Image 1 (tube, each protein chain N blue to C red):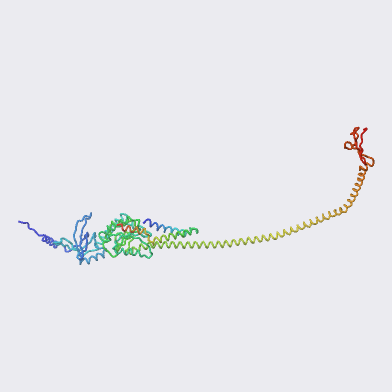
Image 2 (tube, rainbow over the protein chains, first blue to last red):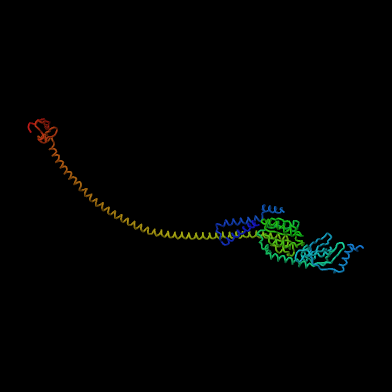
Length: 68
Length: 457
């Protein structure tokens, strides 16, 4: 649980940070491009993880289920 | 004589008679069910026990039965009132008639039941369990756990054959957001005597794999009301309280009453509701990050537009100021140029005038000089021939004089006068002192030479 949850909440926290930075006008116009890129990276990372099945996890589930 | 004796059936009959005579027709009885089963014909057979007040030792036991006709009525009545089915471990208040049969012995026939007692007893037991959990300090623990942002990996405690299980899985698979969920079924009995141990066993297995899961879901078929006493168990509840993952209880209980319901992190009415709970949580996360990103993009766009606008204004200002500066400078320059031109030309004309003045004066002086010199030259040119002529005649005269002298001095003319040149040893003799007697002398005359010898000097 720990590993996966860190990923989602880390990504979320980072995204929140980026947004609050720009809300408080702490973003320099030059860094803006980088921030936009990072924000979109985070978004697609989360979306993919949410909607695309990861073989690794699916296999673990199968293994555990067949353990008994 | 042989001892008089009875047959067994005779004895039993006597006992039966005595009981019938002595006892009341019916008694209200409180007892604990230790065993209960229904047979195919609809009759219900039970075993009642009574446990000691101080420990778990059984102090009394009796068989009991509910005939099909009665049971058909009592069972739903009991279940609708208590919300549970008659089960082992339950204490019941029943109206019984005592039976003694020669063959089957002592037994009780149940003709009525007061479910309120059982309800009360169940409540009491639940309350006790809860108090104990509170005293243990664990009652709130699972409820205080935070459901993960995205409960994607789910450990399910259920039975494959339970209807609820399929509903749950289907609901998860067909969610509107195309969110992927990973499930692992930990097969367990969900009712009956074995339920409690089985579920605890499943929880234990999940515990060993806790890093692979985000949440535990316990689900049972929604309709079944049977045997929920397992879910009032102290042992099971205690484990759930202290479980490291949030536990979602969907055990299909109409009234959220069992202890498990109360200690679980979240309780839901049906397995489908459990699935919706998880889906909604994940979808909420999805929505949140999408919103965040949208907010960010908006701000970014605004920032860019703001800067663009600033830039336009600055450029305008720059343009305006620089044009102004240029204009002002141009003005100054042309003014200076004009001043320069004006003063310059004045200076020029002044200078020109001075120069021409100087030139005129110079010309004048030169001319004057020239004319003076010319005058002098004129005078000279007049005088010069005169002087020259006089000089020439003067020199002529001199020459003439010199010529006369020369003429006179010419040897021929001198010779003609009777002079002669005496040469001694090749040299012209000028003195007598240089000769000796007998030396030769040569005398040069006009018409030739004479050689003589000195006789006396």
